[in-house]
Length: 147
Image (tube, rainbow, N blue to C red; front, side, top):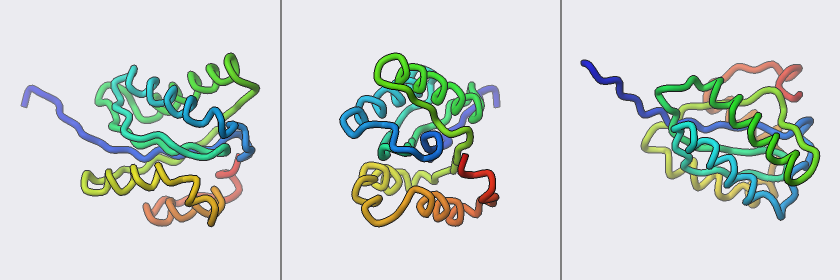
């Protein structure tokens, strides 16, 4: 085959530094739109971006021309720079969680991301992240996941 074909749906999750409520509610939509723009500019099609003042969920299609770790680095670097220059002092946590999503679950995950405010009236980010890791059989060490 002379052509390389991929279609990898990724659910990316990371928090603000120390899980502080750093993104004001009035700026959430602006930050999410900016993150979607970053992804689209690097050929990673943004499907849904959402979250709360202390973390973000991103559902997108991973480009075949860039690695996942480079995608995350570009998103975090460029969005934190933009927030710092245009809104207020800001930083993302060092780590992240990235999980593959089957085509049949894309709409379900997108709806989950869109309903973050309601979801977090019942659970914390830490409990949510633990559940996502467990659901995806992702091993983690509590000592290092909450930077």
